[in-house]
Image 1 (cartoon, one colour):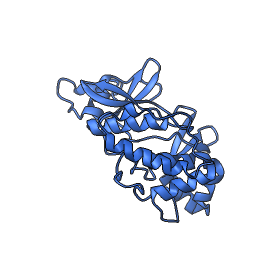
Image 2 (image 1 turned 135 degrees about the vertical axis):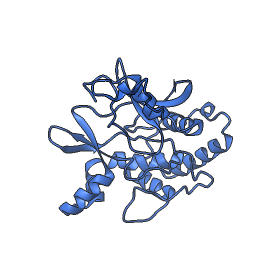
Image 3 (image 1 turned 60 degrees about the horizontal axis):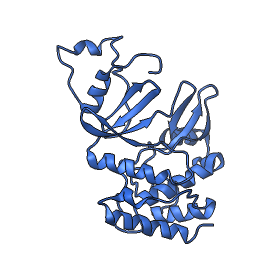
Length: 249
């Protein structure tokens, strides 16, 4: 992936679902630029695009999902947290979210899901290991997911940044994937938190526990203009933020 050329055919097939035809079937042959075996997890169309500065991930899934991810990313950037930045882009006349790649030849990522299997086989308390390795990022994940109503923080959507030379986790990888934000957003409790085990708690409860542990860590104000046409969601965001502010250091 890092060394070989990738053509726009790769993006067309994976992001737009276009069929390879007799006229362009050569794109699927070795050396053509189409990385057939490369994909990302999840149910929304995605594709990697090589640019002059490196790889970018393009994500579709309809205007609502794209707009949710971009808005959630803007909000998260107001807080001190390692995160993937999603910006608005256009591919083939359609709005997409665009983000830079966070892996390289030197660093890879391992999901929380995969680590659970390893931890179980090695007799490791996975939750304890995570908190000792990078409690700050773990708690900020719970805070930000609550604030933006992200209901898709399953164990494939977070995990570890790994040093490929030593095969050792360094920290939790950058917070990513917000196209399912602003769900379960009609009450201040939010959805059930998917990151906390063995306890069962709401996103609100997990976020409050996180604020007690590390503080809120907000660096700048959220601009109301970002919520243009989304007044109810802005009100709920403000309500959730005030709840966390009331217990912050």
